[in-house]
Length: 80
Image (cartoon, rainbow, N blue to C red; front, side, top):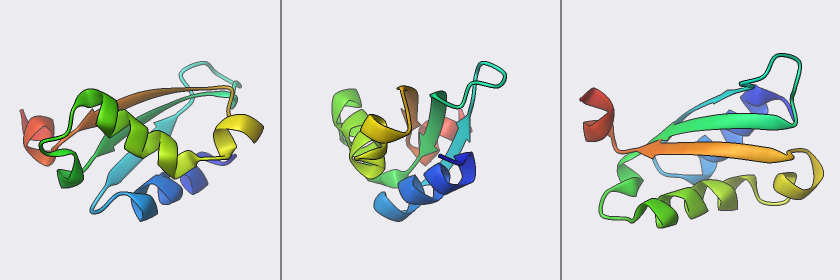
């Protein structure tokens, strides 16, 4: 799955999200990292935040992505 497409899926699924998807290892598009910033994470546990991201990528975790490292922050946390 294209990184930009994955970013768009996350941003469409989570209110006011800004997502950046990278491949930490060169030439390895099966192992990805997603950094997601959204006010929707406010008041949610880290587990709940990560579940929101995994719900956004849904079936692609089975078909296109082998591993996804997720980092989530609220806009306030991102400014620090």
